[in-house]
Image 1 (cartoon, rainbow, N blue to C red):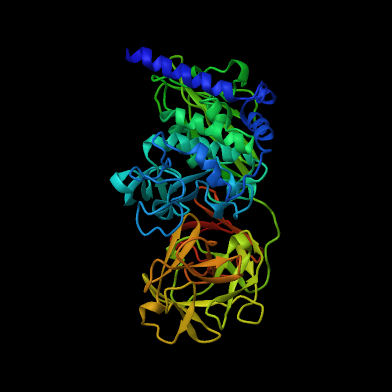
Image 2: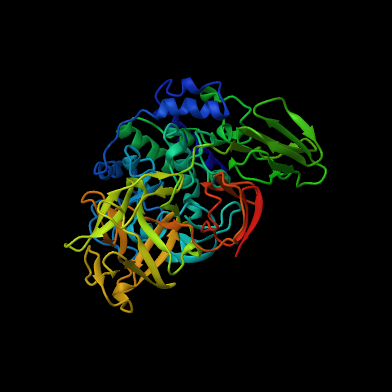
Length: 570
């Protein structure tokens, strides 16, 4: 009975899916695989109707309603929202739902049509959404927050290749979000090169390798559901494009996975083509993730399963085989695909791509400020700029109406070159205090930034010991959160509608800190006078075009290669 029921259900799902795909919709992608397939799909699904941000609520009435008539929330397992329950605050889980950008808006600078693309903007509990912030998706090792019943989690990343904080959705929806990210990397192939977060670094693969590995696993373990099929069909009626990774379960294997050598055939697609070899050897291990590297960086490919043979290609060339570790020297843009074989069983195919560092001329002269990426770069006595990267604005003078004015700045490769503390220029903030009680001194007016009232304002104070003049500074998903100690629900953000920096409880643009360079931290040494790049010990680029005459680069503790020499930062 169970098998009969399951077969009937799958048959029903397949019939529904195929009935909704317009005849010939995917024909242009036929016969392609890998990078070419992704580009062909982009040309098919890229053109679509922008429903508008307010129009999402209309879409949700068709796309995200549970069988009981309530909003289908993929972040919380205990909410029961009606379609109009989206006005108000989010002081706790269950208050209201909002429109969650599964790809955070800060990553694509709130640009349209991504801002209102219903495939990735989904209704979720507002409080859990705020707790997620701009964290990427991943598996959590040690939770710092869990939603009701442990449904969703925030915490340190358990996946290799990333050591930051991640948001882990429930197992029930991991495949849903994986296919949403596959869609976004494909639909916006012509835009993702300028995005932040886990996207960028060219059109292919388009997703950071560590994240792609996570999503491929999630997609396989949580296959396409009827909910996704119904949602795909509903969104299509509004946007007039589709998510091909829902229409063709396992399609990601043809684009990024072990089916990259097999041509896609939409007319004769069979879900059984998904990999299912339980006796397959472990996939090969690359010593370096995809990314931008220095010329002559060495990469190794090792074989984890004894007795296996490594099969690999370089830049689409002929297959090469070996039973030993492969060592490659990267001298040009290089893409390597590799898998292992043992006793006629084949592993998943792993693909890594590297590009050689750019030779863009560096900023020269004085007044250089570099991006702050972690709390280890916060030092009392150092000077910082508060910046909205998405809008290219920096905080400036205090307004008589209790907010901070703004000024235009130019950001090049995580570096700003500007004078400060003058009319029309950014105002530097001198950091004081300590963790969980930082002070922000406006050196021009000799006052501390503070928050004296629970409103969208920034005040000033002479009293550095008051909670209202103290701030916590944390880093989430590439953004900086500067929250007031006296009212920790309010944080400094940029309001583009009114061109100001102020404190807010939600919404507005995130900020980033830039620190004056040089600062303390790297041992003094004699270097040549040409600009240099900074790399970690694996060869990945950390900072570009810095002046070696400076002795300090505001780096976290570790070992770096600067100007060809190994430097220890303590």
